[in-house]
Image (cartoon, rainbow, N blue to C red; front, side, top):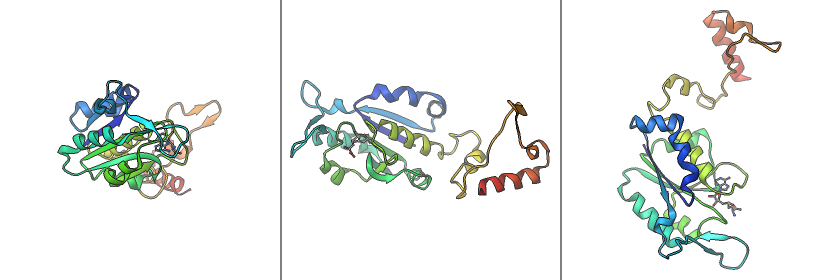
Length: 213
Ligand code: SAM
């Protein structure tokens, strides 16, 4: 699966995409994660991608010209892709949406900054807006990374043990049961007896009850 992240601060997201699960999945050829610097599509010598907002008011807005040029160029080879703008006005990200997104082959994630992007770009070139939640961040980079990581976990092979993905919270309409590891007692707090019993049926019953709770 291919993810294209369009941003004005590529250096902020690059290390995250190289590390851990996502880094390994790229090395294995399961994911293709590309970061694009929006300023590469700016036409003037200052590489400006923003301008003042019409109607007055504080804050700058991403101009349509570089943004649309970037979208058109990046999506040229898309087979089954979507253009997404990360925005507080978007559909809140949840596991149902993550599953829908995992059906695509390519996702272009536009990371806004300042006051956001010119509305005409949203109307003409964006398939959907996605929000990380009802709060305002300084940019769309963290929400874009959240989308990449959550969707990538559903790409076969990215998470080593697929059974663990199936048991995750929200997969069966429930939250996951609690986990414990060694030591059996930590500062007076004990691991529930049933988990040490070796009785798999009882363990399964306990986990199901915890998930329901
Ligand atoms: N003026 C905008 C508003 O009040 O809705 C907020 C703009 S915010 C400072 C700058 C950028 O951060 C947005 O264009 C968007 O890409 C991103 N952003 C901020 N909060 C977000 C959220 N909750 N979900 C997704 N993206 C968000």
